[in-house]
Length: 301
Image (tube, rainbow, N blue to C red):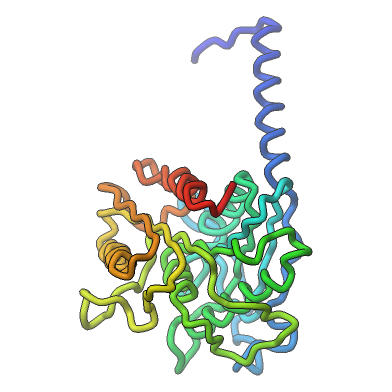
C-alpha cells in the first residue's frame, strides 16, 4: 500500500479537486424530466400492450441496464444547465429486441449535457413486431420524437435547425433511416406533436448495424437512401467489429459520392457494443472526436 500524506495542504487539495469535479457535473446537467409518452392517443397499429410486461435488469461485468418488452415508447429529456441550442435524440442499440439503456443511453445523455447539448433519450418499441419489418415501429417512434422536439423547441430552449440523432448498433441503423428519410412519416401525423420535418439535422452513428443490403454487400440497405440532400453524419466503428464495419465504410462512400458532409473513423482495435466508455481500446476516444466534429461543423458551440 502506498502511504498517503496526512498534512493539511494535501487534504485541502483533495477537497478542492472533489469540489471542482462536483461543480463541473452540476454545471453541465440538471435532473432529467419525467418521461413523455410519444403516443398519448394510442400507439399506431397496436391496440394492446405486449403479453410480457416491460422489464429492466442489470447484466454483465459493467452491469448494463437492459430494457425489454417496450409497449409504451417514451422520450426522456435531459436538459443542459447552460443550453447552447443544440439537441440530440439518443437511440440505444439492442438488435431491435432489447434496449441497452444505460451505456448506450443514459451515460450518453449525461455526456452531451457537458457540451451544453440538450439530450432526449428515446425508449422505442422492442422487440420486433410480428409481420413487420424489424425497424417499422422504432422508426415511427423516432420520427415522432423528432417532431416533438421541434414542436416544443421553445420550451426546451433548442433550435429547430440543430436537432440531431445519435445511435448505437440497431439504434445507429434507426438513426441512419431517420437521416436519409424522404421526410414522409410512416404514420398519420398529428399537428400537436409532429411539428416540421421528421428528418434530423445531423447524425452520429456508432458501430451502426444493418447498413448493408443482405444480398449485395456493395450496396446500402434498401431503407437507407443517401441523396444530395442528406444531412451531415459522423461515423465510428472498429475494424474488429467483424459484422458491421463494412456498413459504416459503405455509408461513408455513398455520402462522399453524393458530396455530403461526412466523417468516418475506423479504429484498428475494438469490438462491438462498448457504448460510451466500456472499453480500454483506443476507440474509447470516440466521444471527444464526435465533439470536435460537432464544433467544426457549427453544430455545437
